Image (cartoon, rainbow, N blue to C red; front, side, top):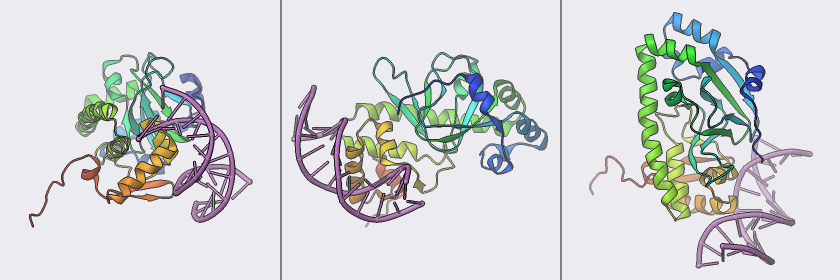
Length: 245
DNA sequence: GCATTAACACGTA
DNA sequence: TACGTGTTAATGC
């Protein structure tokens, strides 16, 4: 798959308003009052992107606050030159770019679709307006910022790990984040190929790592996805409440 | 040694 | 049929 550039204008021209079903799946939408919902309904756009396409690029001015309705995205630095470094995978339910939207700066990373995905976005103007009047929305954005801070710290650790099995485990743990990605259930829909792109390993190596993790009882390998059995274990932590026996 | 690419058979949506 | 998975063989750092 080769990354394609699509101008923001092209993305916009391909977009359409969101359906009621799609709106209902947006985690912060239900937190809004009637007036706020009406504005979002009018402002929010939805667009389908193909695998390899870029949603936002480093240096481009901020136009939208984006969220993933369906599919899988990857946040990374510029892979064209320098070390390709993946910061995070974005499963459905994840919203991103709030940091740069808040400061009205340009994007600091690329976001690329790993497979065909449905992406939603609200304009900077709408985002600011919501931020100025909805406490619930502020709370959502603050939680996103706070949780993502932890994500980036975890990503640094992952990139330093030499053990491939551990890298896969930690990446799965990061991808499987209930606060950041409420759209993810206990089954994470991701192919081994996609996981490979995310972690920076070959599909074959990912396959081996997944079976090692399965043997440890941390996950179960399923067709087209991974079921997480022990999230704490994946993250390398002890279970929060362990009975002494 | 370990991971990667290439190639193949097989099962599933 | 197209895609994802599991496996092996050859190759590279």
